[in-house]
Image: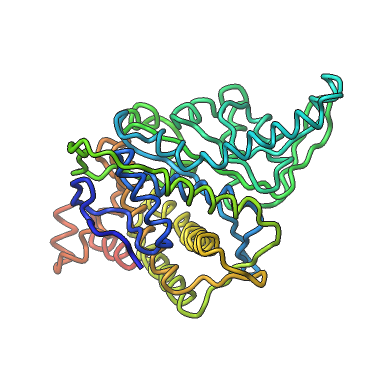
Length: 409
């Protein structure tokens, strides 16, 4: 059920991130905040999904016996400095910040009679980190099995700090921590072996389009898989700020959002999520289409990497949406939740959106060039040319080579 009365909200008419598959309570929350903050609904949705993932923690899990997924997002809000990226993040993360503050207050009371060095050795759980070293982030992960969200108002700061002192180790950690929940082992000088059991790593921040190229144009993050791990939420091209001066209150939806996140934070039992038959069929079809494209070798490296990550995100998005519905409806559970066909259908529509925004990022970073190899060009044009001999001659390659490429050899 959708409560959207105006699909061209705030004057935008270009394709948008679909939200009709989210619980109607959450649709009401994110659209109200978007109007109140005068920002794209995409930004509020991205921050809301990231907050829900952190609140759900490790207590909601999908597994088919071979692969396991927890609610986990690497989130990037792409827009200029006027687009209210930070305010969107802060609004949706507010219940989590309040929970962290309460955890800190409880820690202060529990350690009031302890000496400073003993206090320093007494951990407390924290869900959001804003200023940290990799070691501090790993320590927070060690004591919070629900995972920890790296919160960066400007994600450029997060990227800028990667590898600053450790010769590539920081980036490798965040690369390996995405959708990989094996115990993380590390050694420290003077401290011996340390272990983080089942780390769940999350990242969210904003970035401006004009800094994409100078920041990442000469980096390895396109090739090593860091940027394809992010879901990119972009300002629609024809988005316009509301000039009416109308003030929209968030008082009631703020209470609704706080209640939803609180229910997830206070949930104690392990809940396993499974696909129903329709969801399984839809997801299988999605993977088959990706496999066909890869076998045709029509996907060059970056897009192929994006598609690979979106196959994981399709599950995570569907399960997070289902978890939100569970919390919003105050439903009961017998330790299982079923991801239904419409959950997956909505998720796959969102994955199409993210594939488009990821390619926009790529074109921005590479100044519009796709950096295609000759074989990519041949495959892209070969099916349109009936006479292979003339086609081969026109591009300066032998007919035998063109024939092999078109046959996928």
